[in-house]
Figure 1 (spheres, helix red, strand yellow):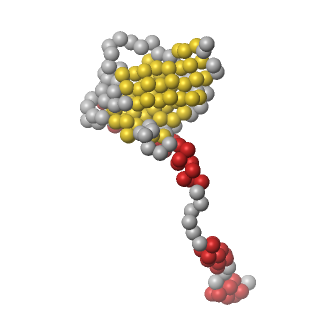
Figure 2 (cartoon, rainbow, N blue to C red):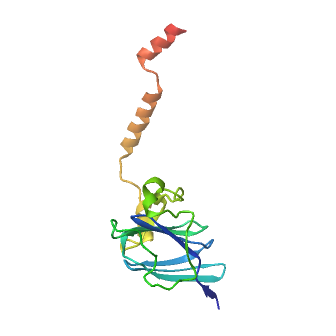
Figure 3 (cartoon, one colour):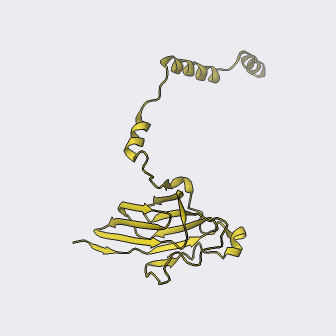
Length: 183
């Protein structure tokens, strides 16, 4: 029977987002269930099951939130529903401490300092490398199949493109004369 434990989860925030990092290498078979009020996570690494559930202090917007597995860790960017509210006083709704939850001091800033230090610790958090949460749309296999389909086109279009490329590389008549005069 595999051992099940809660991984270390570090968190920080900005006015509009909450950032979570699951500190376990080489996680596989991730199962992520995000609702506006909670996050359920499970995955395996080296024969160990890692799992946790967090009930958020306030609501998040699932459609605007993203996550990715970097291999070194799993990262979440959760979009806060109320983007004008003050910083959350804590991550979880409950007042008791969860032993596996820690403040990410490398990204921590005071709310008053966000204008000056808003990017602190977020240099390698490129949102373009994150994926959205699956909302019951096309699954990944369907998306891959769509990408593999050749685009419709005409063979004549390829011939025209080759002709344009040749013309771009050949010197124009006026240029040939200028080259001859300069030699």
